Every structure is written in structure tokens, then in C-alpha cells.
Image 1 (cartoon, helix red, strand yellow):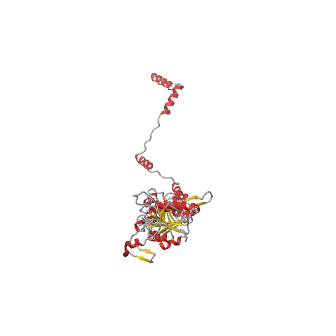
Image 2 (image 1 turned 135 degrees about the horizontal axis):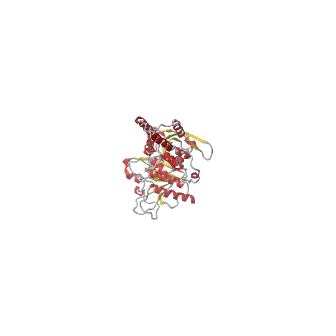
Image 3 (image 1 turned 60 degrees about the horizontal axis):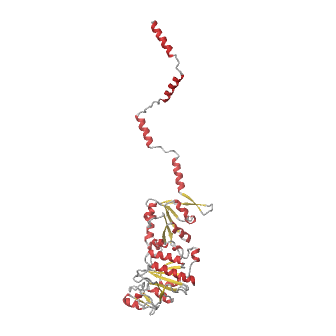
Length: 412
């Protein structure tokens, strides 16, 4: 028993022995390095937590923020010039199946629809700005981006219907390979009410252009562009020409429709009403022979390269004041072609008010144009070409003759 008590007493003395400081510090450091115990929740709690991670709960303020974004997007502020006045333009979004979009194709494809409703279709920022500056009335504007409205006059957009559509929809309805995302439906412009650029008016000359049987849209658009560049004071389109407000003609014209008056669908007996009494009418003629010394070659239909000799057409013959019918045949028409002198295009001809008649490549000039030139003591203008070349493009011939006429009028 005594030995047991001695051993217990010895153990108590050992436990009360204090360790050195360095050893105690090392133990404390090892304790800090120990990882905490990981508590694994039950299986039901784990499944619930994983579901919450996959479907996060939106904050309560998110719906309010989305609504504010929609309200901001529905209104855009466009600043006018350098002034501080701000105009708010309201627009609507096109529905999935909107009949107004299909109307765009109808206006573009149907001349009868354009004439019946008095509407035209313009596409692209430049054409829209030119039309608005000239006073054309915008009815409906389709756009794909809100910032596109900033480039257009804000005051003239307020009275129009602004419809935001997807770019894919505009691309589907457009004939342009790379559309800009802007399409506008305008009321058909009236040349009397339009305001043309001051620079164009100041540089205009007493030179008019008459289009006869121009059937190709690209040719007519190019001719109109040449007429604007040469400084013509007006363009007259007789019946038989392609519609000047067809989209292809408008694109080829590059804004010429809004730079000078264009009168369409004229009967020949009305053409003289748009010309002054002292205006001489000249014909762009594709003469098939070489001109030597004479200025008045044989008077045959074949001599007039662009003159229509179709006996089925009703042509007026001034000598007997009656109309030749198809029963009289082509020979009778050839015998009654007016005898109009011919000259090279660079010889003097534009010495005063002048009008130039351009015929189409397929149907050619009509006999009515020859009668008009004969009554005004005009001439046929011939452009020499290399032998073997059938004829020049009508748009190319128009550009050569118009700019030559401009040169002669500026000198005189």
C-alpha cells in the first residue's frame, strides 16, 4: 500500500511540472493548423441546397428595373442642332405578323397600287433625308435601331408613324443586298410643291430633257442623275416610260428625284405646255451611216436608228391631219417621217432654250417626237462611233449630249 501511494504521489508531481516556453508555443501552433471538423448535413438538405444553386431567386427590385428599362427604351430624346430643346419621339414595336410590313412589298412591286394610293417607298438614310428636305411627306417609317432616328429631322418625324421592326424583317422585304435598316413610305411628291436645293436652282440652265419610251429602270435612273448633274431645269416623261418612282429607278437616280422637277405620264400633245415658245427640240439620233458633207441625208425610217417604225402604232401625219392605221403598213409611215436635218453633237446647237429627246433602246423614238422637233425647227444630233458598234446605251448618249448642251449654253 505504501508503495502504491508513493507511485501516485510521484505521478502527481510529474503532471504539475511546467514545460518550457518553446515547447508550449509549438503545441499552440500545431493546434491552429488543425482543420475544423466538417459536418455533413442529411441527404434531404443537400438536395434542396443544390436546387437553390441551379435556380437562383432574383432580387425583389429586378422587375422594377426591367420596367424602367422598357420605359426608357420606348422614348428617345433627339436634340435638334445645337439648341437645348429636346423632342421626344414615340414609336411602337411591330407585331409578329404585321400587315403594314407586307404593304411595303406591294408599294415596291405594283405601279397601280402606287398611283391609286399616291404612295412611294424610299430606303436608306440619304434618300430619306433628301426627300424630307425637299418637302416630301413621310407617312410611315420602319427602322431597326433607335439611334437611327437621330440622323433624321426630328420635327418631320413627329407627324409620321414610327415602327420599330427587326433587322431580319427589313432584310426580307428589301431589294437591296446590304440594307441599312431604314424604310419609309411617303406620299407621292408633287413637283409644284417641292422645294429643291438652292445650289441646284442657281446652277440650272434653260435645258430640258424629254424621255420617250425609256423602259429600263436602271437607264432611266441614270438619265435622271445625268440631268441633275448637267443642270437641267426639268425632266418630262411621256407615256410609255417606266415609272419614275419605281424603287430601282429611285436607287439609280441617287437623289435626283428631289433635285429637279420630274413630270410623268405626259401625252405628247401636253409636252409643249411645259416648254417655252422659243424652245428648240433636238433628237438624240443613232444615225447608221457616216456623215460626210451633207446635213440632210435620205429621209427613210432606217436612217433614224432609234425611231419606232411599228405600223401597229397610231401615228399622226401633219400634212393630211389624220391618223395612220395599221392597214396602211410600214411603207406609208416611212414616207411620212418629217425631214429633220442632222448634225454632229459637238457642232453648235444649244444657243438658247433647248430640249433634248432621248429614246429607249428597244422601242426607240416615236414619230410624235419628230413632229415636235420639226415644229420647233430642231435638229437630229449624231454621236460618231467606231464602225461596227450598233449603238450607244441611251443613258450614255443622254449624258454626252446633256453635258455638251451645258457647255454650249455656258459659252453662249
